[in-house]
Image (cartoon, rainbow over all chains, first blue to last red; front, side, top):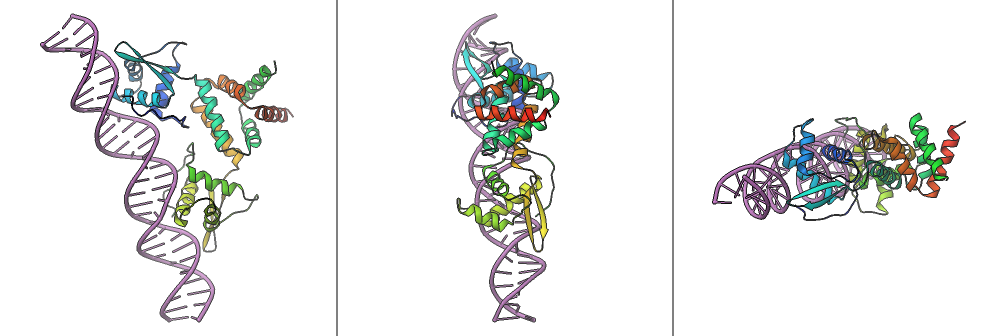
Amino acid sequence: MKRTPRKQAKASLGELERAVMDVLWELPDGQDVTVREVHTTLSSTRDVAYTTVMTVMDRLARKELVVQQKSGRAYRYHPATSRAEMTADMMRGTLSTLGSGERGPALVAFVEEASAEDVEALRQALAALGD
Amino acid sequence: MKRTPRKQAKASLGELERAVMDVLWELPDGQDVTVREVHTTLSSTRDVAYTTVMTVMDRLARKELVVQQKSGRAYRYHPATSRAEMTADMMRGTLSTLGSGERGPALVAFVEEASAEDVEALRQALAALGD
DNA sequence: TGTAGTTACTACGCACTGTAGTACGGAGTG
DNA sequence: CACTCCGTACTACAGTGCGTAGTAACTACA
């Protein structure tokens, strides 16, 4: 199924792709799963074919958002990066491509409209940097 | 050209769409331009047909990323929001859809990998909030 | 050796984007 | 007034990404 490995961290994921990533991100650290397991999990909330899940996971692997490793006859998958990191990456991507040349103002706008919790999280993160 | 107004602030823009927005964002505040003017500007760097620019600008108007107002026979366009605000909006969108439930960690990851300039901009923006 | 579980390959429809042609209507010019 | 120019409205098509899934092929075990 692996054929045209194509590098590139595209911006946004599709609905199903995100759902699959959500399953993978629920895994305890270091754990990995098979397509079968992801399919079973997804089946509780949506009606999707096993092969559909396989296709999506293969695409995620080609995009290098998940890591695919052979284990016996089957492949096992785990996320390439944590949810937090991928989110941060995409935010940085947006800041670079769209906000280019106006990063400062963009960040100011971001902070100004942020929720109180988010502002607090940012303050703490910045404080932690100052160590 | 205006036909099926369709609400929704889709995440990422295409290459040409971004190029058009860039032209619009270069405008002095309160200014607006015609398709002709945008086309002329874009023509210095890329080879694109007048009608192509018109189509793209019409799509941007339908997406409500730009405002289209009749002025005599022609339409004049200006951005719906500033580059900084749109960038911030998209960053928030990413944080919500992808980072959901892990906003704090995502923000921490964002800050940890941010450039010194970005960190400084964030610090100042947060300080300004504290007024 | 047959059967069940997996992967590999292929395909289709839809939406979005880049690209642009054609047709139509208004405005000014000779 | 007829013509031409400009701008808009409408239409179209190819490429790509995603959701969706079927079929073929392989393999390990009963």
